[in-house]
Image 1: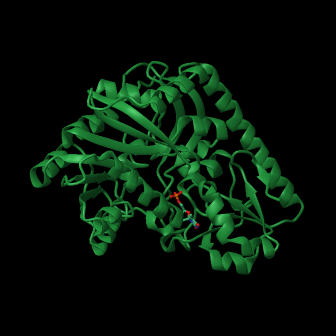
Image 2: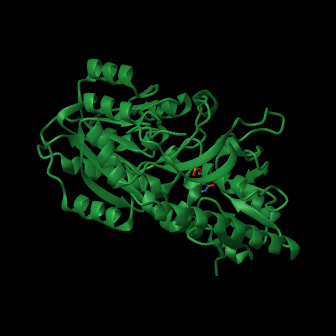
Image 3: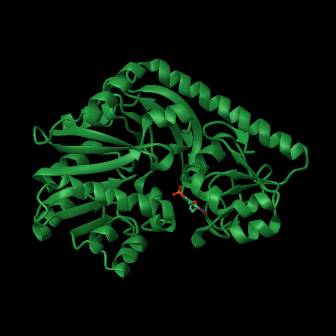
Length: 406
Ligand code: TMP
């Protein structure tokens, strides 16, 4: 039996994806195999928080090295520049000396905007490679996990924060109440915690279950964030839908009574309520859809293999670990996956053992089909890689549905 990580109610099981390896454990053939865990998704029908049951040990997941740099994506650079602008818009007093803290700052793509605008800032990240990247750009960053000690140290050295920002980070942190409590301490009385995460209803609609992997322990909705905030003496006062990561939500949280509750939030909460966020039916349907997608993808790959076609993959994403392992796809069905991250080249994918090569080598090896694992960057990738279609390579997508693109 699992209990909700926020409100402690008993969780209701939705789907078991089976044994999963650590999603980001891209390894050499000779390295030891990845740690595994049973990946079961459950929902709390008390507060609506959708979550994984078990997780691997933190030391198996985070080894101080994070293989992805946000700034590699032009689209994400633009996204974070506009996220920074919208945070500045929250500030009414333009002469105020504001201080922004980013939790999980990665390579400083968001905070570079603070640097350019002369805004006091500090990034926090547990991985030394990304913190070094920040520092090389002049972005202030410290290595470490964000918790009570870090919050106190920041207050001592820099004072309280006007804004705390986090993108695709809070869903990684299992002790969500503690995070909210410590952010509450770090924030000024009228400060705002702005964070964005893949949105539960986007995952349900798109059947994008690959959003779930060892690190992504939560899939938030406005309803669940409202409940978590309330439990920890904070208040959700606004939300804003985002296109990133196949449908995300940006949440605005402040101290109770400090900010007007937006109409947008009320509409979003009504939508979630009417859609049945606290009703088991939508989750049962999701589980059915996940199994259906597995069958469809396997059928397509099998038929292409039987027809003698060479199928490869594009982008060895963390998400691909879930789809490959749940659908039991290995190098018999997908010969290799190409990727732009130098550290992944020459390695194999976790569990499924598919070799990773550069995009340049992929073109030389010229597959007939490429499965797009970075489907959340579909528009950017399809436009920058239009040469592939001219080479006779066709794209296979599986979000929202399994199909070969025209
Ligand atoms: P992630 O989804 O786990 O962050 O991983 C994204 C991976 O996708 C990363 O290894 C780089 C790769 N990638 C490409 O190869 N080409 C691209 O255009 C993009 C956006 C990502």
